[in-house]
Structure formats: C-alpha cells, structure tokens
Image 1 (cartoon, one colour):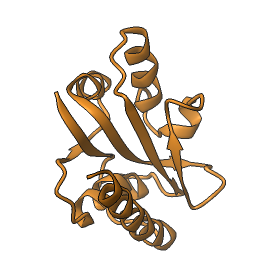
Image 2 (image 1 turned 180 degrees about the vertical axis):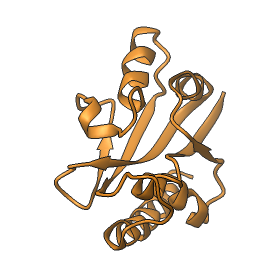
Image 3 (image 1 turned 60 degrees about the vertical axis):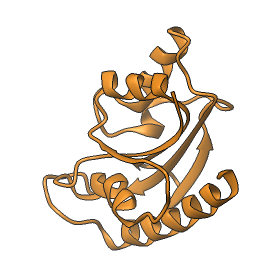
Image 4 (image 1 turned 90 degrees about the vertical axis):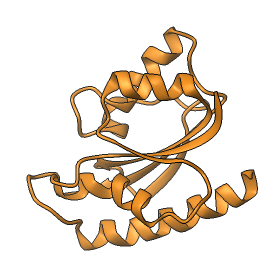
Length: 144
C-alpha cells in the first residue's frame, strides 16, 4: 500500500468535466498523479491501494467556485460529487461498507457549468483549476 496519490476525475471531452484532469496536468508534486474517468471499481481499488487520497472532480451547482472537503468527516451525496451516474460518492459509500476507505480522503470539488460534449473549460473553471492546483501543492508540501 502506498502512502498518498492524487486523482483527477473527469472527461476532457465534456467541457468543465475535464477540470480534474487539467489539475493533474498542471500539478508539480513528487506524488503519484492519476487521471481517472471515475469508474466505481477503479475508485474502490484506489481506496484499497493508498493510505491517503486527494480527488479532484467537477460538480454542477456547487454554490461556490471550488471547495475542499474532508470526505471522512462529512456526509457526501451524489449531487455534491459527480456529474456521472455512479461515481465518487457511491465509491465512497461502497468502500465504507467493505471497510476499504483510506485513512485520509480529501476532495477538491470545482463548480462547473458546461458538461456538454465539448473540449475546453469555461473561464471560471480555468481560474478555479489554478487555485486548486496552488492549494493542493501547498497541502502536499505540508504532508511530505
């Protein structure tokens, strides 16, 4: 089991849903960075393989530009964490039932408005991506 990994969830061909991958592309950290499409079985495998995970995902109707959530401290609902049918919130619930949650599970959620089939992020999401990159890099410097 490795110590920590950072996972960007998304699809770069669905507009703002590419935010998680964009964060991964911009990060400059000495920690494994993974791009995921959010497949529930892949996410559960990641929970079992790492003691600490940081996820980045785009969400509709977040109410703020972006937010950091300690997923082990607050209830997570699907509306908050995904634009996918089954995704991160379901993976967290299933991993909890299987007793495979990591010791630390942080979510960086970015408010998106365009999830249509298109490439490129909206201006607001581009700004949030940069802020999230900076925040994750600060957080990783404190953990390593």
